View (spheres, rainbow, N blue to C red):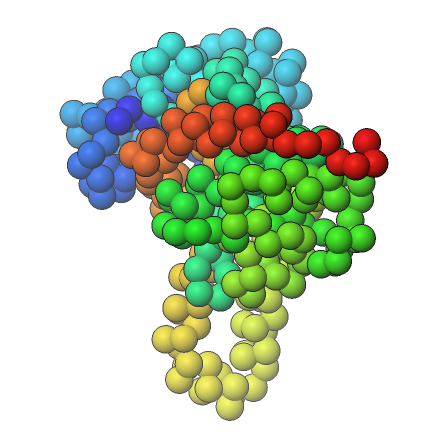
Length: 343
């Protein structure tokens, strides 16, 4: 498997990205090639600093960098020799199987559209992985599509089901449409119709799910539009950081609490590891003819290594071929289904 990494797009620079690449190569001998895309001088200096001499590394020069301040479409048009654009082109021209970037999210999504959609997919979706009580769940869309139609949400359910089954290892994922209540009368006309369509598919569809189901082992695949999904994602990230700070401040409030905190140190370390966003590596853009991973802009070496691991898992499981197969079956089933009585 060949993985292209945009090493210039993150907040911490090229050296941190290459440190992550080195970790990933050491952990996975199945990776045949990692293509480092960026400024040659920066890459050369970082390789020397980290002693990255693995023969599986190839450098692909790119003289420009798309920043977070660049407008996505304008940036792609004007900075054709940016590391992000060059990395996407490697997948487009079948020189790489996956692209990873911690850069501008909008530019990555817009640029990745050049890869084309998988057969039968109406729109791609950003799938994010979250921890729950005993296992993880996946939510999509987390930001690629602000407004969605019911059929698109139903297709997100199919794609998320494949990902949860193959990558998360859940044999029969429970799929739910995110809403403001579990009753069928809740939600909006779009979510109501999406739920009706999902119920006709070959899914373990459990109906509507609510916010308190997400982190309570109540659902494995959460379906929503990108507007709602992105709000949930950023709220969860903020809340996680706030809880950590509050816990630390309260433990330090008096000596007795500090003693108790020291005794519970093992539990706190286990909790921190379970909730560590760097373990997840990034979000997956499902539905495109190529593997695309959006790493967080603030990713450090472990997060970059995790993103490479996620890309390798998706390639290894043949997720795209399975998505194409299941989407074709879902489209055929919905086309053959009778129209609702009130249509």
